[in-house]
Length: 233
Image (cartoon, rainbow, N blue to C red; front, side, top):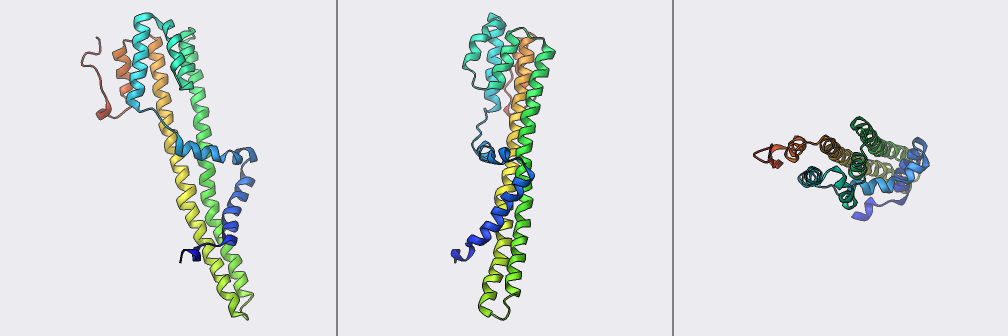
């Protein structure tokens, strides 16, 4: 029966112990923000690479046709703060090297935050089975201390086994998969930001929109690329 796998005490030992260990290992403010990290993993919506390329090429066409200052109006409709800040820097006439330094610094810190979140869940993935083993030892102690009472042996053995079960399940179905998803999301977002950075630098240097498109297409797989036959057009 399903009810056989439900034990409040075992849950408190395994899950509670995991969070207690996490609180010891990480600052409280960052552990509290764990909900935001989970939302980032499951609710993050990225722009398809081809759509992102189209948007950046559109900015390149506007800059070539009307001048880079025309992008100041276009940037008002950009939802991506990284892209918007980069375009504003280019519009303001910031030196290319400084733009690249600013954007790379921001990208590095974003990746570090994502790495930290994934690391927290990986740590929880190691704490879960360990807490399960602690629960198993507690169950064995209860069982061995009541060998003269046959009715107490069954509950003690159940506690010993169910905590190991909870530790394995929470680690392999919750914590470790979330860490893997955070890493995948981080890689995806990092790629997009590098595409944006390359596009902004190319626009500021006055490259032809088709050249901008070709530069950005190298970031995606060949079957997704859509490059004009005449890049000099």
